[in-house]
Length: 278
Ligand code: PGA
Image (cartoon, protein in one colour):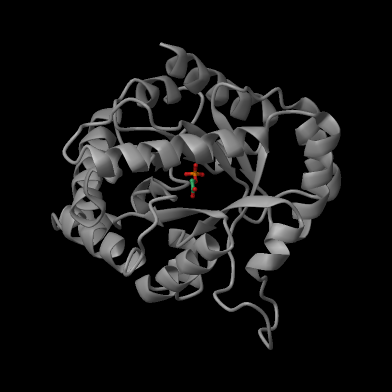
C-alpha cells in the first residue's frame, strides 16, 4: 500500500513536470514491475504455499494475479506474510454490476484488495472474443476505480511473418486507449507466438518493439509517454530475465509459466531488483 501511494505521487510529479516543461525528456525513472499471471492454475493450498515460499523485494513492484476465486485468500496470505507483494486480477467486467452471470466487477476486485488488473490478454482475445473496444471499456472501468490496468498487446505469428507487427500494435494501442486521458496504466507487450511456447522474443527484438510502442504512446500522450512502463511477456523465465532487464525500454516482465513456482519467480524478481539499483 505504502509503495503504491509513493508511486502515485511519483507519477503525479512526473506528469506535472512533463506538462510544465513541455518537451523535456524524462527517462530512466519508470517503475519496474515483475508480474505473475497464474492463468487457470493453482489450488488454495498451493496458493498458501507460494506466498510462504516467496521472498519478493522492495526494489521492484511485484504483482501476483491469481484466478478470481483465489484473490481474497491471496490477499490474506500476502497480508499475513508482510511481504511487499501487490494483488492483481486477470480480468474484469466493464459494467458496475448487474445481470452478468459468471463475471466479476471492478468494485468486487477492489473489495478483495486488488490494485492491478490484466486487460486484453491474448488468451481472452482468442477464447472469449475480446476486441479493442471491449478492452477500452474495461480500461476505463479500471481507471475510474483507481486500479492500474495492465494492458496486453501483441501480434500473432502470422501477423509477424507478414510484417504487420507495427500496424497491429498501433491499432491495439489506439483502440485500447481511445478517449483516455490518464497515463496511469502499464503496457505488456506479449507477442502471441511467444506465449507458453518457450520461443521468447530476443531482448533486442523486444527492445526494438518497445521503442516503437513508446513512439505510439507519444503520439497519444506526448512526453507523458516516457513515464509509462512497458513490460515484456512471452516465455520469460529465470534464464532470459537478465537480458531483458538490461534493455532501457523493458521496464519489467509479465510472467506466466515461470511464475507458478515461487523459486523461479523470485529469481526473476532478484534480477530486476538488481537492475533497478544500477
Ligand atoms: P508465459 O505467459 O510466460 O507462460 O509465456 C505469459 C503471459 O501469457 O502472460
